[in-house]
Length: 112
Image 1 (tube, one colour):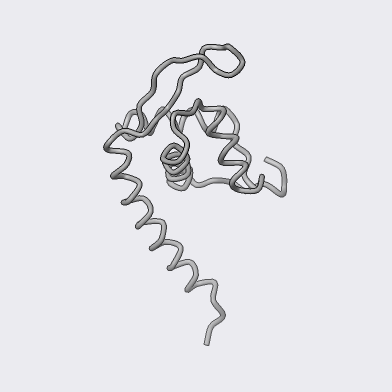
Image 2: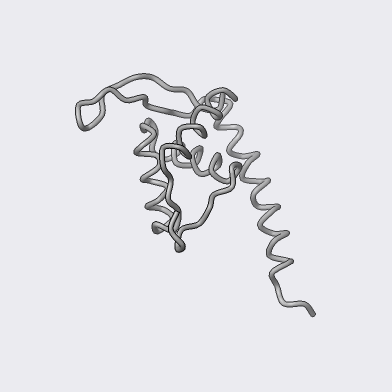
């Protein structure tokens, strides 16, 4: 990643993928990565070595499902969508992220 790009923590990437699929499913891996980059105003850069292991991990946990289809380029592609478990997991992951963000905000706030 370039010096203006940010690293993505694994749990954070999981939530970004789940939220992307919640809004735009079904999507193939390349489309998910580009959408995350777009929403981040290109401060994040996701390559195949980042997005596909995350998709495999989420699928193994039962949070997403996949099926083969044809991409816009007329190529065979795996399309991902949320499972019922994934929809529930979004709530848990969001609550966890909000707790972490609130904790970090306390550390970053000027001391009094």
